[in-house]
Length: 251
Ligand SMILES: [Zn+2]
Image 1: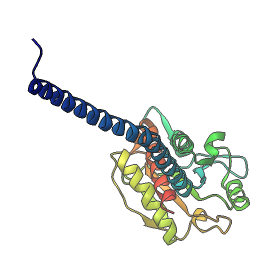
Image 2: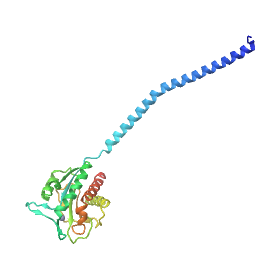
Image 3: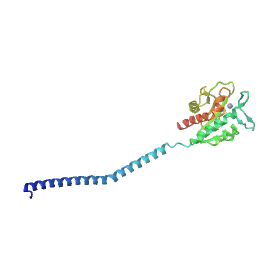
Image 4: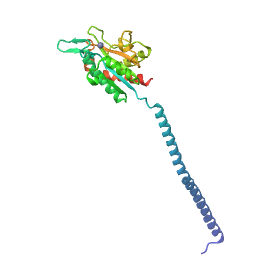
């Protein structure tokens, strides 16, 4: 009826083995738990430290690479002269509509100014005044604001001129600005390229009142490129703005 001694020993052995195994399991579990409890806050701290470092590095990077606040002047060619008279620049009629250079440059200048302002650039332009500020006023303004980084003068060429862009420059720095503007336009507009052109005879490029790189940008022929200039003024302005931003950011 009762188990004999051997059976009891066997039973006890089994119980002891089970107990020992259970104890070992408990110990291992406790150890794992202890490690986890110690480890978790440490890991969180590490993560916080890492993310803080990353944030510091990012803000340091942002601080280093935060763009300089640029300012530019966009002059719409011709318009009201020093005398107060209206200077149309070149003009051309398609038989119905009379196109004036001084008028058709305004929407392009406005679009260019708008895109630059969206990019955070401070823009001064007579396009805001419907082209009623003359060149003498512009040069005086530029002389009084040596912090201005670039001066772009927008024109279009007369009716017999070939189709295409032709930025005019005199100095090496002006040539770089001319190249960037031209590249920006050709990325946005399908128009021939007449190439960068060296000129020594233009007030815009020679004036000692201008303390920044200046370019006179011939946007195209008033006849051959009329549709581009009058219908694609927004894309044209965007191209010029992109080119100018490229130039400024490369400084
Ligand atoms: Zn002109």
